[in-house]
Length: 76
Image (cartoon, one colour):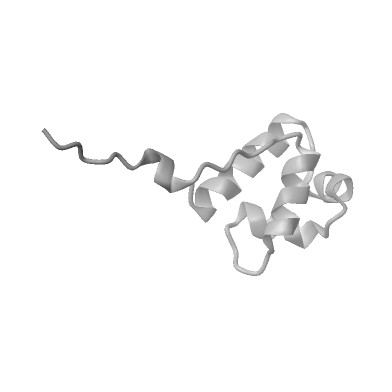
């Protein structure tokens, strides 16, 4: 996912949860501007703030190393 897709996802999840940007910010203990920046894919928010917002939305992320998806060529 890129920053724009993450922002759109967060917005959809927030709206689905029936939360305003302010309510989500309060729940995540971040500033409302942080939620706005995430949703608008703006520069200036740190990954730790994104993780707080995702946690407040009860969303967990899974990180998988790219190397796991690379296929090795086998010799015949």
